[in-house]
Length: 64
Image (cartoon, rainbow, N blue to C red; front, top):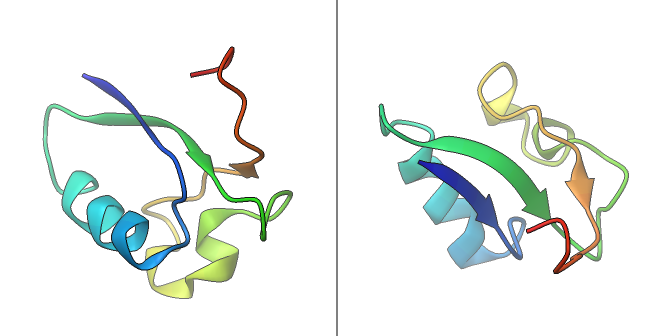
């Protein structure tokens, strides 16, 4: 199942990503953050290095 997480750097988004990265049937395809766009998720949260290295993007309904 492909998943996009909107607001990935907020408290709820962070916890959701923590759960989803461990789910064997989930592929995280997009993570968004208005504050940190342009950085990778693992740059903002180093504990996710090698686990969630996706670029943080602005929210784009067409992409999702």
